[in-house]
Every structure is written in structure tokens, then in C-alpha cells.
Length: 64
Image (cartoon, rainbow, N blue to C red; front, side, top):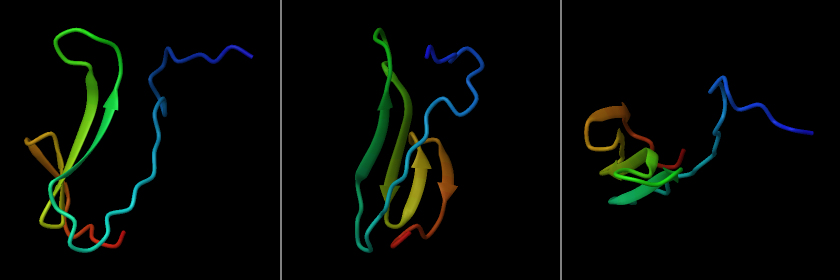
């Protein structure tokens, strides 16, 4: 039974859908505690998906 999460490969997986016209929404993975408890934060602004506010992940993600 015991799952082995030591490798970090495919440890977290998710599916999402961004309807056309959506902006300012966030998708977050919260894990642990301390200064930052997030391991992943994605934002949608005007159809583009961003990793935190630092890196563009994908453009034109509406209706996908």
C-alpha cells in the first residue's frame, strides 16, 4: 500500500479548464507550512497562464 513520494516525479497532477473571458483567477498547490506554503501558483490574466508572476507558461488558454 505505502506510496513512495521520494522521487518527486509526477507527485502532483491536476486538470483545469479556463472559460473564455476569465481573468484574475489563481490555481494553487499548498503543501507544508512556513514562509511559503505554496509549491505551485498559476494565474490567468487576459487569457495567458503565468507561473506566479514571473514566467509565462501558455498563451491563449481560453476554453482549454
